Image (cartoon, rainbow, N blue to C red):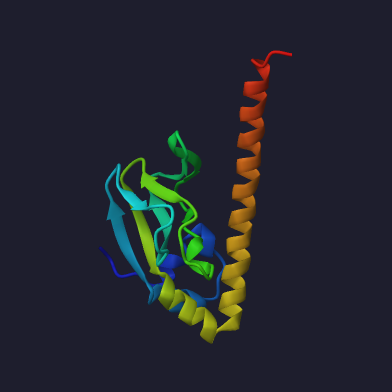
Length: 159
């Protein structure tokens, strides 16, 4: 595995356009990792101490549905951000994540990133805005999925 640098992070969609100094600061909290297909990266309710930018592969984000088991609610692939619960005070995973394929990613130490954000309000603001954009997109995707499922169910409902 190669050392993570600000220059290597600059190519990540989530970090595209971030100032070089901010990329360098984040690089000191990052490592390149690989996970095999079927590997559970994190489980709902666990301690959120990391997050990832996916370089290759595919991750299913899931949640436990009582009586049903794990239900996939989102998919994260090339260039996607995996994990946002690290930024919230509870630092507990709101969902789970399992590798659908082999995954190569940049893994970030969340505590180190929070420390860098505390020391640099501009970095904190930039990461927060980028995170909100990702979450807004995921909420819209979830809305679309729920509407689609409701329409499928309503077709078979008796009047």
